[in-house]
Image 1 (cartoon, rainbow, N blue to C red):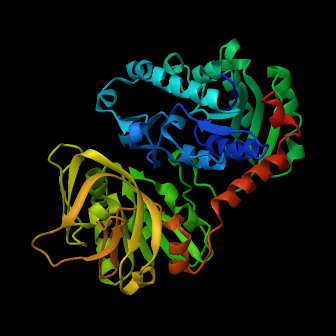
Image 2 (image 1 turned 60 degrees about the vertical axis):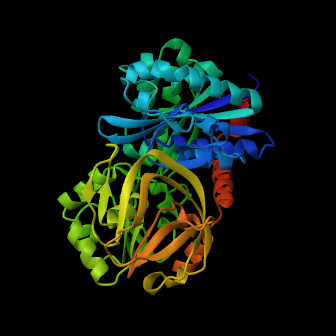
Image 3 (image 1 turned 90 degrees about the horizontal axis):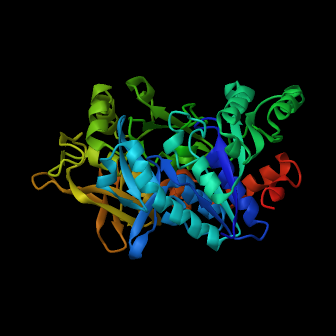
Length: 482
C-alpha cells in the first residue's frame, strides 16, 4: 500500500460527498499526483459504461465515472466494485466488478456484504498500490448503528486504507452541528480517530455568525472545522447519487422530464439545467406536463412498473396529446421502449405490458444486459428533430431490451444508427426514441438543438478545484496526505 487515502464521509445521504470527492480528485491531480477515486459500494440507477474484466465492458456509478475524469484517469470497474441498482423498494440488482450477479441479488443484505467485501477489498488495495492518492467516497452515514457491523463501505474501508477522513454535512438543512457531533460520537474510538476535519457544505449567510459553534464542536470532539463551503448551485456537476433537484431551473423553453419512481441516468440531463433559455421541470402529475414545449421519457430500471405508474398518474393521455399536437417528444432507452406498442418479457426480468403506441416498435427483454459505448450518427430527420440530421455523437447503452419494428404497422423512420450500422433510434412525426444515453452531454447536439455551447467537463473540474482553494484552510488538503 503506497497511496495516501483521503475519504469523504457524510452525516446523511445528499450531504455533498460525491461533489466534494470529485473536487478533491481534481485538486490533488493538479498537484502533480497520480490520483484515483474509489467507492466500495454505490446505490444508484445512474451508471456509466466503462472497461471491465477480461476485455468486456462493465458499469459503475456515474459519480465515480466523473471522479475518475476529474482525476485525469480512465474510469474502470475497480473504482466502484459494487453497484446496487434499485428495481423496487425492497430489491436491487447487484453489479459486481461491472457485471450483474443474480446470485448476489437473491441473498439477504447482511450475508451478501460478507461475500462482497473480499472483492471490494482487493480492488481497494490494487488502487492503493498504483497511485499516490486515493480519494474514497463513503455512503450514507458511517454511524448507522443498526448496520455498522456489516457496513464495509464506510469505516471498514477507512480502516483498511488508513484514510484521513473528512466528515461533511449539509448546513442548509439545519442541525449541522448536531449531525456532526452525533455522527462522531456514535463511532467507536478507533474510527473517530480517523476523522481529521469537519466540512460545512451549502452555507448561506454570514460565516461570522457560525461562531462559536465550530470552536465548541472542536472542544467536544478534538476535530477542527476545516472548511465552510458557500451554497453553489451552478457548479456544473449532476446531483450526487441519483438525488435530483426538484426546483424548476431557468425560464424559456419548457422541458418536462417524466420522473417515474425508477428513472435512471438522470445525470445526463444536467447540461439542460444550465442552458440559458431552458426551463427544466421534473414531472409527476399532468399539471406539471401542462404547457411543456418538450416532454422527455428518460431511462428506467423497471420499465413495465414505471409505465404502469405513468398510467396510474394519468400521464399517458397528456403525453399522447402532446405528440398529436406535433410537439417534440423524446424517449431515451427505457423511455424509448415505453413509446412502442408492447413490452415482451419471456424471462421474467421486467414484465409484459402494452406500450404507449406512439412508435411502431416492439421490445423484448433478453437475459444478457447490453453494455457498450455508442458511436452514433443521426440519419436524415424531419420536423422538430431536423436540426440533428447528419450529426455524429458519442453516448452509451445499458439495457436488457432489444427493440425492432412492429411487423404489422407502418415502418418507423430510422433516426439513429451505431457505428456498425445498427438502428438504435427511430422517429415518427414529432416522436423520437433513442437507445443512447448522454446525448445532451454532446456539444454538437446542444448546439444543433439550442444554439448554445456547453462548458467542457474539464472546465467544470477546474472550477471545483479552484473552489476548494478558496474555501479550505491553506495547507489543510496537503496535510491530509502527509
